[in-house]
Structure formats: structure tokens, C-alpha cells
Length: 100
Image (tube, one colour):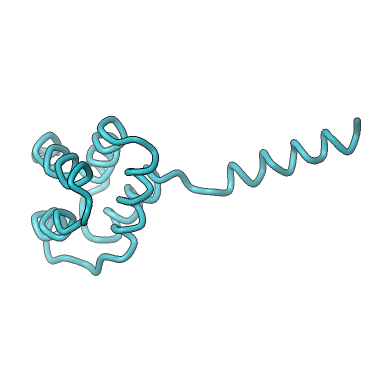
């Protein structure tokens, strides 16, 4: 019984240590120059529009982007993703969060 408890405790710690795609996206948006409010808004909008696999794809794609000069530059770079559903969600989140 004690061993089972230790295994579940270790799995819980490992799960907490791994950042969700939404958090990875939000953090990377801030690193790329978006305001914290806009990054949070866009990450939330993407999370609402995409399933987990697509969120992972966006998080991986965003992780590879270089800094853009402006929020518009980040959005333009994001639209280059080779995933039509993700590109549509990115465009929609950009519009939804334009005034954040």
C-alpha cells in the first residue's frame, strides 16, 4: 500500500511539473513581446477553440518562433503554422484580443 501511495505521489509531482500547452503558449507570447493581458487573452481563446493535440501543435510552433517587432508581427508569424484549424483559431483569438 505504501508503494502505491509513493507511485501516485510521484506521478502527481511529475504532472504538476509539466507546463500545459496553454501556459507554454502564454509564456512564449510574453517572451515574444505581447503584453501579459494580450498573451493571457489569446492563450485562453486558443484553449477554448482547440483540442489538446492542436494546442500542443501551437505550443510547439510558438516555441520555435523568433521575436517579432510587434504584436501584429507575432500574429503574422503565427498564421504561418501548417495547421488550418490552428491558423483559424489564431486569427480569431487575435481579433478577440485586439484591444487587450
